[in-house]
Length: 201
Image 1: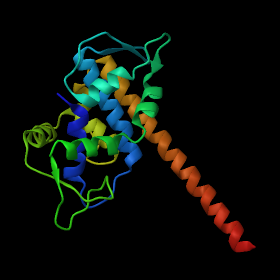
Image 2 (image 1 turned 45 degrees about the vertical axis):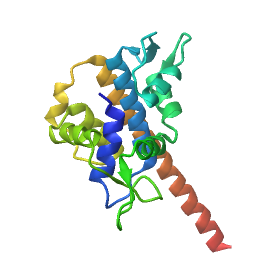
Image 3 (image 1 turned 90 degrees about the horizontal axis):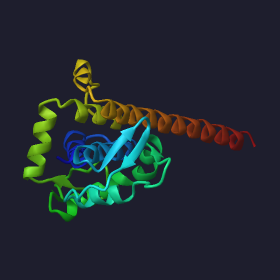
């Protein structure tokens, strides 16, 4: 299962009419990678720390790359620090990977909300798998999508998530996205104040 790939596929599929915040999606993708690495036994969560394992390769290039980037010295890295470090520009990386794998094509008149270059998804097993998870309302995927800024806010379905490690990762993603939004708002305030100074001169 590749939650990160499914997340970006659903993002492209469900949000064609409005741009997404790339930073929000990138943070959610970094969180999705952690969850996939947990499933693969390549990492565990101890408190708020990511403890790497010497597990075998996952068979997915980007997930294996993520596993190789895990900090392997104590006290290890916090989930939050991982999200910021790994998440930088990650949405563009995943969109490019879909293009390399032939899962996207140039559309007629539609724009990909994640790229300046327009692309759209083609029919594929990967797309169908992502759509099935999305339609089934899988709690983890819904939580990540909500954090990334698309899809409905997960309600009682979230109660189905009982694993502490998964809950910790999803909470860290939510906190990181809120922190990024706060940074954006501060920048907007600063830019507005700067503009007002120039108008008054």
